[in-house]
Length: 171
Image (cartoon, rainbow, N blue to C red; front, side, top):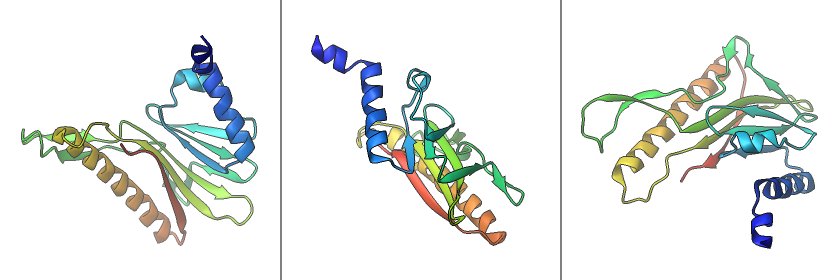
């Protein structure tokens, strides 16, 4: 019975919040952070950005501000899908592929104005022997690369540089 109470969602949530409050990370990327977790809240000093699926980003709001865009460059809150064939399917069709969960945020340091492009992603899970899902995971990661390249290139063209932080479950 003790195991069930310790493994309950409210108990696990409280442990995660205590750990975050103890360690005090400036940024936390979360995946599999679904509605049940979100309803339980997060530590007060953090703001949360939610993306597609179960991905989210927590950040210390005293240290960073969230920017929806900069100099006319809009930042999508999630990784957009790319069109690709899935080699393992061999169906010859183009498919819209993106990570199953993703969240993207452009943060600016309140101290030195450093830009951070933070991404939380959750890629398809499967054993290495499942070639269809391994191929899908590869294309999902390619979608992440394409988007981060586009945004970092657009920022650079406007004279900005951003540190890229990529976290999540890459399976």
